[in-house]
Length: 135
Image (cartoon, rainbow, N blue to C red; front, side, top):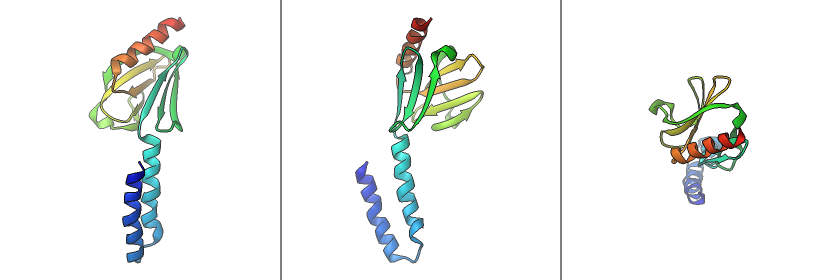
């Protein structure tokens, strides 16, 4: 992660020195893009006896779903146009960093929360196990 940042800093420093452009036009992407990379580079999903938590990157941005609120859970696919990141989807939210495999949880209030995963069957099994143990 450091190498791309250094790779961006050197050309940017040269561009600032060689042009009359305001410094912030060049510095802004150098600050914003690495910050987004740190915040959204991965999605870690944790299943405990009482909740399912999805945490992006270093864990600042997260979503927690209480198992007591889950009515139904299934492995499915997200639509291609839903993209990645945090997205509002029909009746709920999608949290995803790559691919189209998701575990979809329908809550008792009718809302849907979808977590993207490379291992949908394993995540589904972990959530179903936690749900059965909490009953």
